[in-house]
Length: 432
Image 1 (cartoon, rainbow, N blue to C red):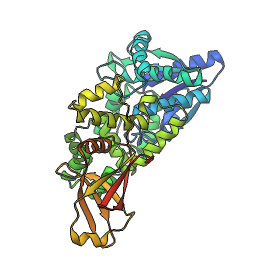
Image 2 (image 1 turned 135 degrees about the vertical axis):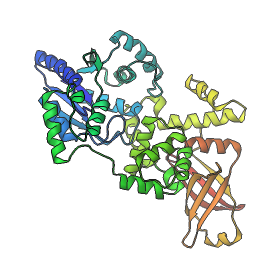
Image 3 (image 1 turned 60 degrees about the vertical axis):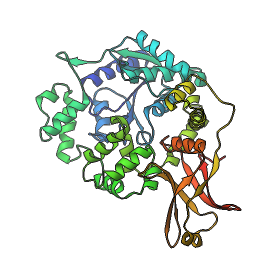
Image 4 (image 1 turned 120 degrees about the vertical axis):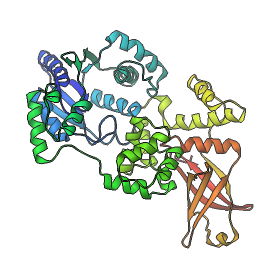
């Protein structure tokens, strides 16, 4: 089976070249050409311009035999996780040959990819590397060989251009929107006739462009409390506080501005907004990663346990005066400490006397970082909401803050009564 994985939003002449290459391979081998088409959200975590159904028709018109939807991933996970899942899906389906495009020779790509495959971690591939996503695919393909004892055979063709001009789906979409939803010649020159016909049909029906549900998005960004926002995947403490500070929101670009203030780049901004739009919790992402971990698809250095271990390592090194940036580098290079990270620990609270009568053993509590950058807990009793800064030793305070900023490690907590008074028991991940 010949496979291509893509957004195809919309199918342009560069994509047609990919499909034609796959078609030749399929005809030569007597096999089918299958497009693994992203559905719901794009690989870059954005809503699609054209619907899944329209993009499927475009791919079939261009010569594909069959379309397989890939959904439920791109509003939950970064590409460091979605690429291993997609490649594993293709291998398990029987795909042998994979077609992609790049302006770098396969030999160069293999050289870059080998370094990342050896490390077993596919996040943080430098932006200055050409065709970095193709490099990630090569690296993951090598990693998964250990599981499947087979891998995809890559067929890399040069990226297509028209009149020396690079083809960009983003530019095509923008020009159609800016031309009042009519396809200008500046965009049409990059599109096959079949795509133009389908796009025009979809525009007439009002199906294009696909958009976010901004009513839901702005309501959640405007009304969710810090603890609730902190429980959403891909929202760090700085992002949560920037969002709260920037309220009220009417437009998506206002949310972008707040997240950029928190240091979020375009890809992470799109992912965070998509997670809020779909109400994706940290637990949901954590459980999804754990499921694929169990199947051996997630690299060891990207497991949830490794993320927790890194937080404890950096915290332990910080206690000895090592800057966190340096500790992260040391961990990536393989340095470790003998002590295992704690999956539960207790924190103290500042309680006022009249609040004590509202407390019961086992009450749920929420963890968040307030606008003064303090780790805090919130308890919702029947008669009042009780907020308090957490009292933690420096080691555990650093550890907890790193876990809050991990963006997908769930943190749960409950109130417990001890001889010395009330405490918040914090559970990390599964709490074991």
